[in-house]
Image (cartoon, rainbow, N blue to C red; front, side, top):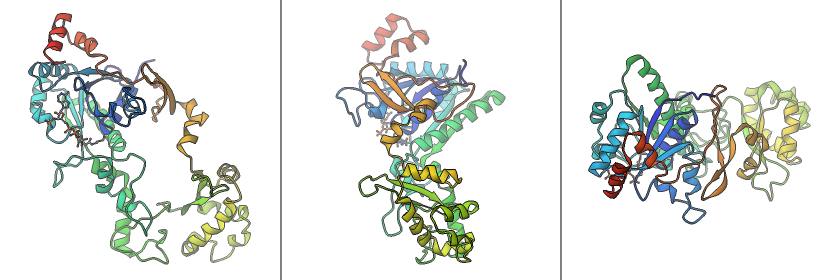
Length: 415
Ligand code: CAO
């Protein structure tokens, strides 16, 4: 079956997490992704967080599926010529170097345009134009600068970063959308363009609801669904809301049977208004359905803490899966707190290709997260990540280099 991005060639000049997330998605949609790495070393993540000596780390393998790897020293004059040949052959150059690195290498936007006016140059940077534009940025810096950390955690504790890699993988996702959009526009204009996804912007986009709340707070001085109401004090900025739902339907994380020994024996419980009577019946508080202090969403807001404490008395008598089963019978929105172990072992995720087992020549079998975006006409087949420079000869041959030229470039240290 054909793939959505068949025929699109990506010069993948990315490393670490944000850029590779983007190009891996494009590869899963069928693009030919040629990852350019530094000879001898490669993407630094090949050797970071290694669990097996001298074998590409899971960090690397899980972010670089379905790509080809070529090693080029792009600071070597002859290596630069090879990169130029690649630029002429590809549709998109994706990079996430520190600000200015590509320019210092001699590959400015103007130079790339000279070589290939159809080229789309897509970049992840920590910040957009402004006071921090020259800064190097990693995941948690973006979470802090994009508003996530100040709004995550509990009111009485410090700002907290989340486990979800919203700065790196989140920005990679944003960049992928920018690239396919630019490819679409190119079908009309025939021209390439620059695509920039700044990590601060990506995180802020995912924290959109918190900027909403900032304005609500400024207008009214309070937010009734936040745990700070009615007992706490609001300051000038959106506070950390613990496990509050963040939306119009109050929710909280509640203990389930076994919580004393299992750190993940918890359930997320939402007191959705349309099923309030059913909630009251399930937990044995039928009288709340008609009690004016509890019967309406507005009346419940001052009592949320007590309400969740009462519901928890019920959830603590059930495992999270038993509670799920019962609550779902009544369409009460809830979700188990799943550990990574439980997710890795979940058969339904294996069935859909969201969790995939991959075989690797030096690592053996390992689990990875497959393509989370499913296209009915462009199925994803997850293929192992390339070894360093595995496809250098293959790609050089496609670029028109003869075996003798390849061998000379290798001797010169250009590839
Ligand atoms: N041949 C020769 N040189 C190469 C090369 C190649 N194939 N590939 C890269 N290089 C060079 C670059 O040209 C750069 O050289 P200069 O510093 O002389 O210009 C050098 O390698 C290092 O690149 P870098 O500065 O991007 O790498 P770093 O490890 O120092 O910084 C990071 C890493 C992530 C902080 C930085 O790249 C960055 O801020 N990127 C943008 C934001 C981003 O994506 N952050 C996400 C990080 S986690 O996903």
